Length: 82
Image 1 (cartoon, rainbow, N blue to C red):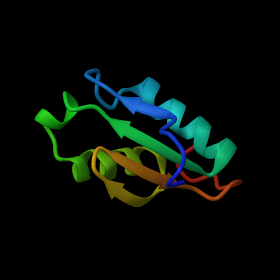
Image 2 (image 1 turned 180 degrees about the vertical axis):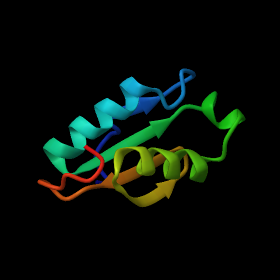
Image 3 (image 1 turned 60 degrees about the vertical axis):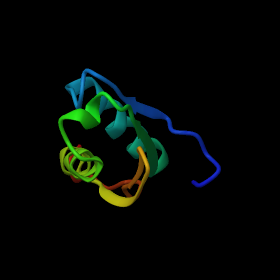
Image 4 (image 1 turned 180 degrees about the horizontal axis):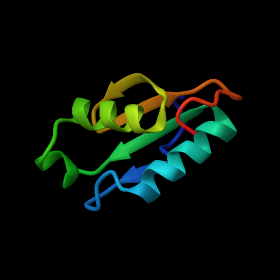
């Protein structure tokens, strides 16, 4: 995933239902999702807090946090959180 670009961006709207639903959809289809968090979100929460919250809400595993980007993983076919 190092060479891949993020497929989901979390912006000033924060971690809303539409963002969580999109991440769940991509996790189900691909198993991995790369998420970019914009600076406006990080004024209120740390990057680690944002990544952990998204992982919890999507029922996925947080693989890596690097800069303003994190990677989530969920094995295909897993029903947890969907």
